[in-house]
Amino acid sequence: MEEIKQGIIKVILKPNSSKNKIKEFDPEKNTYRIEIKAPAENNKANIELVKFLSRALKKDVKIIRGFKSKEKLIKISPRE
Image (cartoon, rainbow, N blue to C red; front, side, top):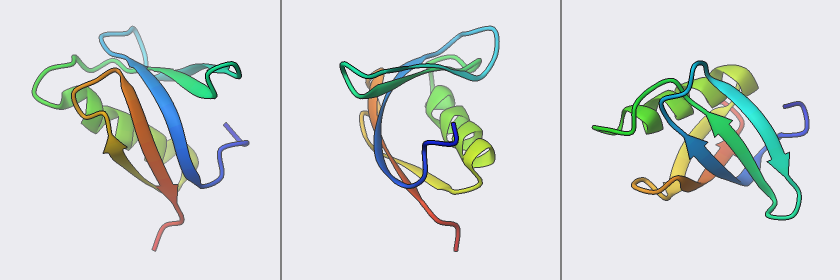
């Protein structure tokens, strides 16, 4: 988690998990695998992902691509 500073990261999201957590980093795909408790309906998993990463990193987090996909691009920037 400490290695995520700012910039754009790739994420593979797994909704309907038992708890919110960053499961692993896949160096081959340069992607973080993240599990989220919320279901993948009505944008709930996306909202929960942004909240989870914002709290964990203490930074602004925004999904910039992949709103309807498990693979997402996330922009991380300093809080204003």
